[in-house]
Image (cartoon, rainbow, N blue to C red):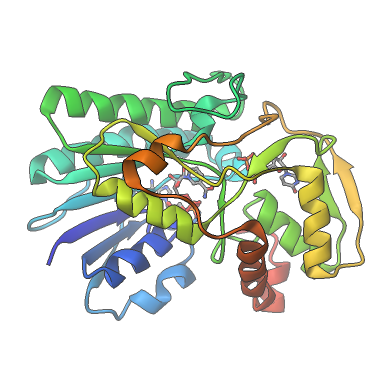
Length: 319
Ligand code: NAD
Ligand code: UDP
């Protein structure tokens, strides 16, 4: 049985990846320090014979006994309010954490895939974003702690690939959503869902003319799975190119949830990208991958998840 270490396993993507790898017959070691994750996301796996959990901060030396075939490095705060609240940890997990995991991959002769992001493109001047676009990031702005950690992560990964001949993969993930997102993580989907369910107005930042392109989690996990087993070491965009303005998206959510609330406008956060859409030609060609779940279907499933949260979970304002 092949063994895979998944960091950030108690988070949104890490927990879905753990499910997928177990389903595919792998032995999964989940690692997390719960800084933005939730035990609930992996509660169903804790007793599974092919799942083992290690509570650990990956910015500290990472020790795994025995052989290891694959590493998926997904540990990192991922939402703007999280990384603004814990900026130093965000920089450390992308830099020191990635260094530790690359070292572990080298020692175990394991293949490693790292979770990069569309944020490496910053506020993009090229649209849609292709992998060969270098990006437009404000290094010293508040979001820089995340964007630059991820850019460093890509650089050090390529250095290990070139210098040590390590087998590496880099996925540039575009906005992904689905069940197990943390309700109060500040990202737009849990924010709007929580507001609709609590009977509050939906907060659109800026004019709402900024765009995003939302990918359902099952499609994202499938793209990541295929990328890991490809032979391509350079970054690959995985996301759903169907782009929408945040204002139109808020209106879609009002319809979906049946809320009587309205949209209220708040200040646009500093350096909030104005437009974002992945060019996925490379993933289509290389991985024969394309997203299958459209927004209506994905959002309906996501709403089902948020609807079954307890009133206590729904009203919890702090993580
Ligand atoms: P998440 O916050 O739900 O999960 C991240 C997990 O990492 C959490 O469980 C957290 O506790 C853990 N973690 C953070 N720092 C750690 C550390 N030092 N040691 C051990 N564990 C640590 O976020 P997510 O949406 O699941 O994102 C997972 C990864 O995917 C991140 O690397 C993120 O940058 C990347 N990503 C996600 C998206 C998206 O749309 N969801 C988009 C781009 C990139
Ligand atoms: N956003 C919003 N209202 C909210 C939360 C977010 O209008 O309550 C906007 C945010 O300004 C951004 C978009 O929605 O333009 C997506 O934000 P998110 O934090 O989900 O992801 P990111 O900015 O990292 O793509």
